[in-house]
Length: 122
View 1: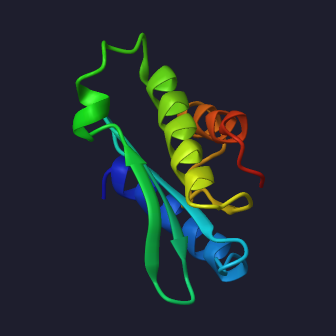
View 2: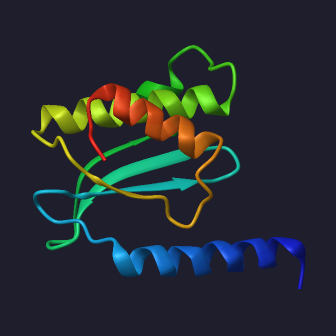
View 3: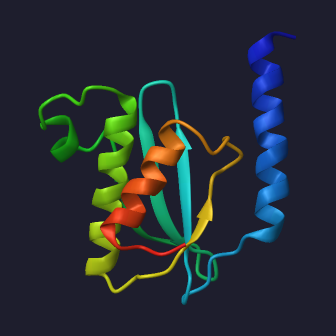
């Protein structure tokens, strides 16, 4: 198979390993992050009920209507701040970070920095 399949397989393997240890409770819900080639998605999930409490992504109308970001990292940072702002508004202050098998660098790191700047703790 191709290189992409190997990369995807490796990410899914990491994801499985991480999710064994991470579980979002009502006190500390799980902050799940997904990135595609173009977009960034983040949501805060309470795993006991399976509900998404807060979400933010680059495909939202409010984010798309903003003037363009200089790069994908800047967009990810903005999404992190936006998500944290919404979470703090709902009374969420602590989360468990689920990087979804992605390596903690680049856009993922920028998003987590934005989340921390927005006031969430993990």
